[in-house]
Length: 272
Image (spheres, rainbow, N blue to C red):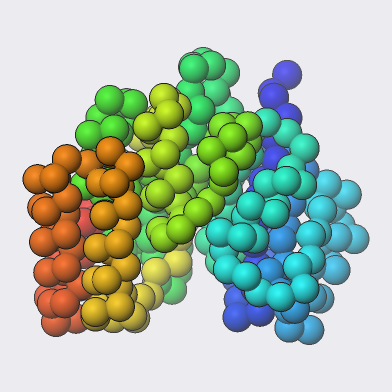
């Protein structure tokens, strides 16, 4: 018998209802279904989004909705949602992405075969219009040792595809600071948690070229510097590693949009 697990999602008013519905369909259409799905409504939703929530609440007895009075951001919403999850294993999912039907089956097999693992992620397929036409893939290293080395330079897991042990995340204070997910993974690595990445794409992720435009400029450069400084202060990075990361990340944030897109497509991703 498969271990029972929760799925954790957070939705806010700017989400598109049709994408939200497609995401929920993929969660409930798995080869191994979750024992519960915890959906956090991060602040008041639109009437169209509320209609989707009502539809799935009627259809799926395992859906639990947690409503927050005001929008507080993803990290706060996920921390609240984690407190409502009933099971030790929790799978994360974003409400505009789509799980492949066998996603949870693959990840549960990892925890069953490797009980020492605390967090399991996977590769992702990125698409712009049609998920049957993948434009790029984010590939990640497989073993814990490879992941720990990779984390010195870049985020070592795909947050939209993680399944982790709830007790480990809550024991480290949950999501904190910026970037919420990367900082959590660093803390988990530093406290001896074991990582694994499935060497297969398990989630289709929507990607718009406009995202790269929004992620450029001094604001994001400063955020990157603050995050790397936090990693160094925590003892995760050496001083040379800090200097290298700040130099590379600042250069990417401040370069022209066209060049940043080329770097993303050809150096940070694998073409679909």
